[in-house]
Amino acid sequence: MAAPGTDTVAAPARRERTGWYFYDWANSAFSTTVVTVFLGPFLTTTAEIAAGCPLGTDDCTGRVHPFGISVAAGSFFPYVVSLSVFLTVFVLPIMGAIADRAPRKKPLLASAAFLGAAATIGFVFVTGDRYWLGGILFLIANIAFGASIVVYNSFLPQLAGPDERDKVSSRGWALGYLGGGLLLAANLVAVVLLSIDGDDQRTMDIARFCIVSAGVWWAVFTLLPLRWLREHPAAGATEQRGNVLTDGFKQLGHTLRSLKAYPLTLFFLLAYLVYNDGIQTVIALAAQFGSEELDLGQSTLIVTILIVQFLAFGGALLLGALAARIGARKTVLLSLVLWMLVIGAAFWLPSGQPLPFMLLGAGIGLVLGGSQALSRSLFSQLIPEGKEGEYYGFYEISDKGTSWLGPLLFGLIFQLTDSYRLGIISLVVFFVIGGILLALVPMRRAIVAAGNTPPRLL
Image (cartoon, rainbow, N blue to C red; front, side):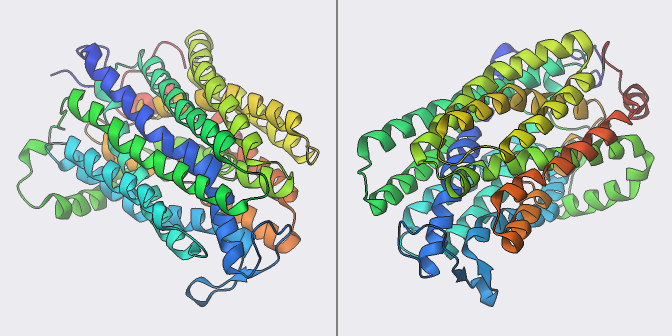
């Protein structure tokens, strides 16, 4: 079998690629319906209830005390996001090492996906002031989500050669945004038809069941990639004789010791972790910013995220096409400049006016999918053969809603200043530093150093 990093890789069946695309369709419901729209306002309101603020109270200054730690109710959700990613720092690289050692990856994908979906469905029990239960379920779901993406991403080098990966990765992201947008559209219909003005408890119940719907969607559509994907065991996987988990820890240790052999790969990963931390913080906290700072209703937030989703579908394909003309790295750098403009505009958004917020969402949608899809395909070029799971484990630490420095900074600034606007503008630093680091990576030399064949354009 030819090396997956060369142009001589056998073309996989169209059905297998379609199966791979559909896991993005399945899991994106968690990113959109849960992380981006409903969970921030829902968990914040639940924490405010626990802090003694009645439903519908504006500017709650109460505090909750998880494990005896005093936390501003408005900071609880970003702190939980940050904690979940701190934990993934330990879990995801180990999951990647296990995926590279295991002779079959699909059971790993199934286990992580169904665990995350079950935790999301468990939000049916998050009622009243049970903010702590919501926090625990989100921790489980978000870590399982990241673990499943590690395994999912590790299939990419076997599905496409160097010159095809930008296209294949972009199609996956595009289909994911489309699927996530369709479920969110259905939830918008539910919010509009079932909500009653002035009945805040009913609004909370609707939000809770919308979160649950994302878990059901995630579980059901995961069945398609599990049926259509083929196993692509690494060369060393068939030689594995011991316990997969134990060998995963051992292999992770070996990888950590050998990372110094690929310094340029690590340099790219550092750049990605910085700028993607900013992207994921915007995604995770946009709804909280819109509801708490701009006083926008849930229907406005959902419509805006729908705009983001459907424009991100086209934006991923558009930036993928641009990458075919000027190269993926140049396209990503351009998208980071656009991200800085978006963050700057967010700081000046007027309160109580839906239209400017929706226009900002349109700008986010155009750059969101492409910047992420092309980063994923760029990184695939820098992974040594047979190490896909392990390296994507490190990559996934800051991917798809698993950022931690950004939410931590956002939460700290809010706690110190009571200003969500200052929290959002502080995120510009991630795009500036990440863009500078990415521009300094000698991509062609880095790809060759990893033992792979560079694509025609970078």
